[in-house]
Image (cartoon, rainbow, N blue to C red; front, side):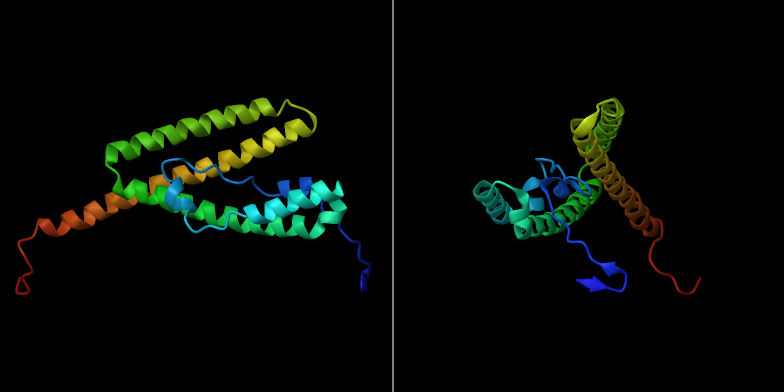
Length: 177
């Protein structure tokens, strides 16, 4: 195909193209059941991709399957990240305040650990180093977003307490004061 800029090159997708963007989020077991409910997990498309690779042995013959899986996985991961953050926000609002603060401390510890592991992984060379850094960076970003969402929920709780407690000091509406 030729356009105004000259001939277009055809792009051949390979398995490593599935590593563009962040990796799939890790879902905490305590919220997994309702976060995963109704989400397209792309397992049927992944089976077709593996079958194609098994039959053809090389990626250029499986372009449609790679593209379909990549699109499905991106949509799935975006939806899962939103649901995980919403769950953390709700937990921050609804779970007992002490437990919510403990959860926030655990998430902060996990962030610190992932940051340290990412620094150590910076010394690993080659494809293995890239994969480690890619995975750790994705997990670090997801964990930070979960912590932010949980803290938002805790903040909303405090705002709601202030709204609820304000009218309690008055003895009713008096229009003639």
